[in-house]
Image (tube, rainbow, N blue to C red; front, side):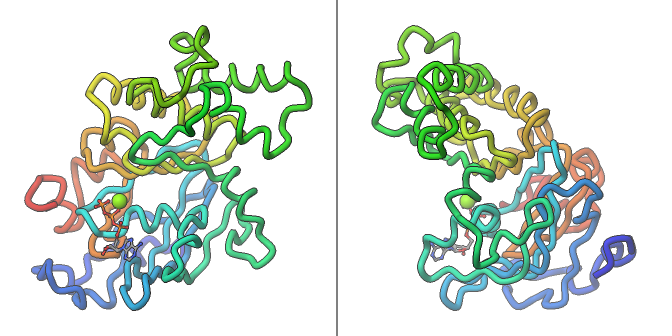
Length: 290
Ligand SMILES: Nc1ncnc2c1ncn2[C@@H]1O[C@H](COP(=O)(O)OP(=O)(O)OP(=O)(O)O)[C@@H](O)[C@H]1O
Ligand SMILES: [Mg+2]
């Protein structure tokens, strides 16, 4: 595949037209439509395949995530969004039957290299999950935990500074500054999710992966997280999985549409939502299935 050859991604594959959505063997020779590759890639995936035992969950996906951008990943339930996201910081390693092939690089370096330290990798590529999952510790300790195990603070004052900065960046400081010793689990759902974002930020990651971070939150808490994502992209590179088309449209600059393990189409978010080029993308965003 040639990154500069737009025709490589340009044509709608004949196989895609009139596709039987339940036929997993259709489109064997599919090609992603749009622009999977970018000039300023922070992470790049090439020909990635993921299997759970003999279940082929991700098929030949090549996709870049541009630096200081938000990439949204959308698609019907079970299409492989979480699987692909987890492959970006090797969270799939902890699933024994899971096997990943292909190449995934962070700043051009293979994250699946045998000498890659996965603890360090997951500090560089942090993750925020669907359900807020604070540790059963104080608000302060939730944020201080990562910096402590990575030795990022050399004094109590430095740790205090990291905790405050992280909570400020997660737009939670004002609400918790007087109750830092109270349990993180005692916060509201939206506050807990911002605490988890603060925890991810505290170790100064380069990339933040978010898997449906707002699906357990009400519209007001969701709006706060969306504002936050917009601010965070100034410092971090973000990939977010979402079932909300509106959310993808609001927070992302690029959108990737997955279907049955394949990356069908990727491009500028505006284009994907106003002029999708692939029939499957169009069907999904117009609510015909998913
Ligand atoms: N731990 C696992 N073991 C076996 N199969 C799995 C596992 N996790 C996911 N799968 C399978 O891989 C496929 C992709 O699942 P994945 O969770 O990545 O989809 P998704 O797009 O995130 O779906 P959703 O929108 O429902 O979260 C599905 O067929 C799923 O059943
Ligand atoms: Mg998922």
